[in-house]
Length: 198
Length: 238
Image (tube, rainbow over all chains, first blue to last red):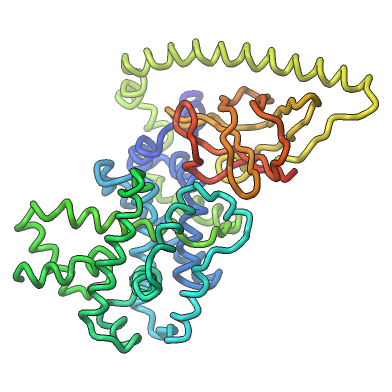
């Protein structure tokens, strides 16, 4: 029992990748440490996608249970644990949005969410050089029409055809904006010699 | 699928914006053309960045209990004792780990001594301050994430000297360290790095607090960073 207690205490000292191996082995202590490290980012994404507290909480719970059961699917060579966990939240969120019977999103909602993406003066915004700020700076370099299609696809779960219909533009235009937008985000980091944040 | 069609769809694929049938076709095409995988990965990593963009939201504390509680019965199959098998601990007690642990012990001993010295210094300075008309200025420190249980204060001791005192600070993950930041006009300025001590941790700031609005602590790679790479786990508004 002493060893068990010792090991539980050691979880906090492990790197994320090692914790994933522990989670795969069924160690709830490791899972709790991963939750403490990444739940804030995961919840922020869930809230951004779902637009309200209760749905964001449901999504977070659903995603973390998926993480618990699928820890073995994580591959370190494909990226950081944090990025993988956020991709689980994103994929589950898109599934939920798309399967929702009352697909509540409208053109107004899309436009409103695009406005919400503007930087605020909240305390967290002070981290100008932090990962989030770097990403925002990269997104700020995009023309509004490119940013809009990226956000509609990523956060609201629309397919390219749905976006074309909602914006009343040709499908080819939407695909072009997606490609240019992603290339430009990538180029933002490459041109500054910065690593893509993980 | 022909190459033009693939080119047409790859960005939407990276964003997860394809319907199921088209997504499968892109994946089939990629499996037949592994030379295209790196470009697809680059677009995917650019799309993944969007996950970091939202405004920060703190999940409610009760959600943590619900989520951790939900997996505990699920973990019932392997009893805690069964996880202490010789094979399992063999992995933990392998030579590289023992070597690592031994060197870590040396480092910890050094840090402990430094921490004790620093605490002594703080006490001495506190004692000196008591004899002076002005008391040290203190600011409350609050923790979040892995440092949720931590508490403490930032103490300005005079002559530009500032010390961060924190209780219940957890160990850092392997190859990571704590780093202090002074937030000045919205910009985090790097300050000292430190390791936690058992009980009370005392860490001295390298620079005076002049012009800083907030002191924050993040977990950073060993040696510290020029700009924060993670969210703050301790903050103190000045």
